Image (cartoon, rainbow, N blue to C red; front, top):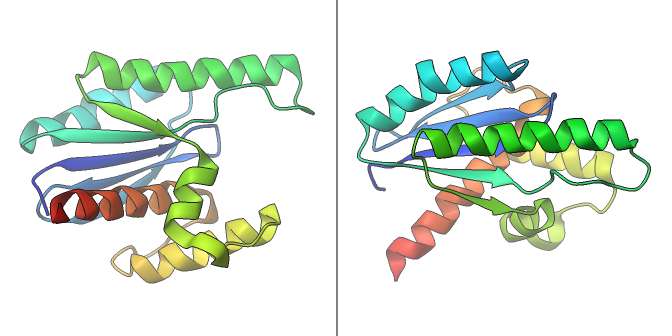
Length: 163
């Protein structure tokens, strides 16, 4: 395990931000801050301090900020702007990030065991992260994807370190 702080971001109003702090391995998960000012303050007062305290930080942002059939144009634009604000929060603090599609991280983490139906898939991921993170006293279902992404980052980090 390296000194890096890992940040996994599931964007959206009902998304979450999961953080593993360097060597301590301490994991915390937060609901998505409400609005641009709250988002900026969250990064200023929490994330930036963590990354500064650790050797380095890295973020993974779920690549979902685009239009989906069935969504209104207004909703799609609002969501895309929010995803852009998250990217800017990372860029302005010098935190490198990569994007990953939900299908990529979910398949790499859970493989064929992952249910096809959305409701069952969300429940499956929730049950997995509850098992993986017993140190968290309460995990809300809306936080499960961010924690699953964090587990994916940890898994990928372990594979890089094996090489």
